[in-house]
Length: 260
Ligand code: PGA
Image 1: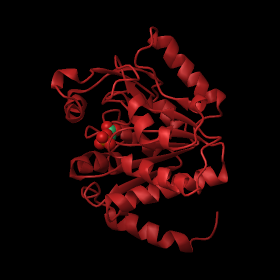
Image 2 (image 1 turned 30 degrees about the vertical axis):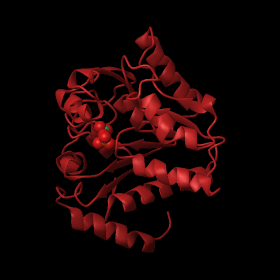
Image 3 (image 1 turned 180 degrees about the horizontal axis):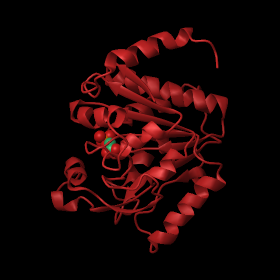
Image 4 (image 1 turned 90 degrees about the horizontal axis):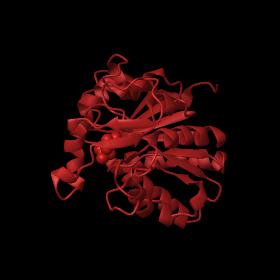
């Protein structure tokens, strides 16, 4: 796992967008795993800017989103379908048929989840998965206790997540209680992982993810099992890390290392 601490949210977002651009430039038909939430907004803004400047082409790209609330139609302004459309997809030249987001309104969740897993495989697997982290240490909606080999399925959201998400809804009782989410096992199959975290309220979850034991209680800790995981943080999200000097040292010395 590589840990890279940026001076600000903006710098972190630019770094992440640069890494995604590198993947697309090397493989124009790459499959990207997309995340929602406040954290990746800066990354999407920068990717859109690069696209508008003619430096990034999404014509052959396929995307799979991590999760969606159960019960919200794609037209609902709090659905992740709406979030992705407004913050990213409508601003770039991605083919609508190449965009996959879990359905929050399917009549058969089991078969939808199986189909979603199958589609990821048929598209060649995810090259780069973007991730956020919940204050309870979740990745996607894999709440504490989720199996580290879980697949796409229905989850009941933890109270902590419901409270965190209440800021986006008019009334607390409007926050969905269930979600459809890629599993930890699904996420670990992506060829590389890029997790972003910003702000003091993520510091404890980040420290447990990077420096704690691998445990289903902090599903983000499963990143320790992945051969190519990068964690991008701002200063406040990194404030709970004990080995911070070491991570800075490694990143500083990396350019001088012999090529692999
Ligand atoms: P946030 O959500 O980016 O809105 O903090 C992250 C998450 O819950 O994964």
